[in-house]
Length: 296
Image 1 (cartoon, rainbow, N blue to C red):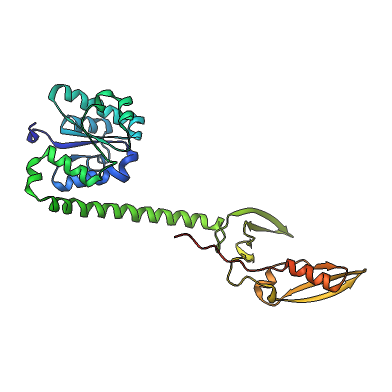
Image 2: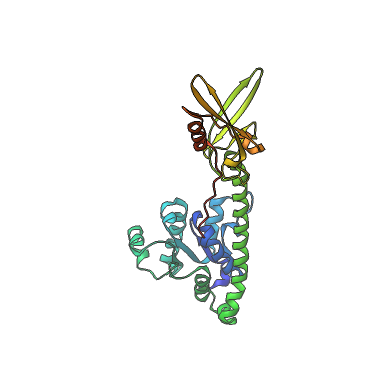
């Protein structure tokens, strides 16, 4: 095929779901090798007609790189592109370069027995760089022979890693934004979920009280009860005990000695004797918990 008569060396036909992990790095590598690549992120401009641009790309490419995947089988647009390439192949000979991405021979056979009988690159065994090198060897053997394998891997690999790093950074920023948005619904110490919230009316003012699964509580966003995993959460020694007797029953009271201890309400211990009341309140006194270690 006379590549000089065509505007593009390859047309990338794929499902959008496969961009991130495979198609974008593949397209970048092919472009860095010196191929003229029709790829939507490279070729479409604001205001372009999608259908017209795709038709022009299909008509003016030497080869169509078709990335078959479960998402491809489920999408109308990629199958329309494949149909256009198949029509050209009937008249011109081999045009389609197949890549199997996450699909088995049986799945391809079910989709198209003709395609299942064609030679394809399977990404279960190789990555985007190796696929790009095989495509370059088939499409532009002259460019392939100009450089050593090591130089070609360097030319493509550096930019692929840079592109992937950009994607990683973008994903990290998105995750951080999501964490920030969710933080008000999580305990700031242990990450426990918000269990429920109450709107309490004090005279003429409304007060929002939120209760978290760990026991952490806030009033209008300010801590009213600490998380039991907080480093300063009280232990039994942070309380002074006092016992009273009323109506033949002993009550043992706990008075917090620290600010955190004062925030944790402890109901009095009860008993027929002072010792029983003190033993009862000891079972009720708060104790700091240790956060479980994360698995490495």
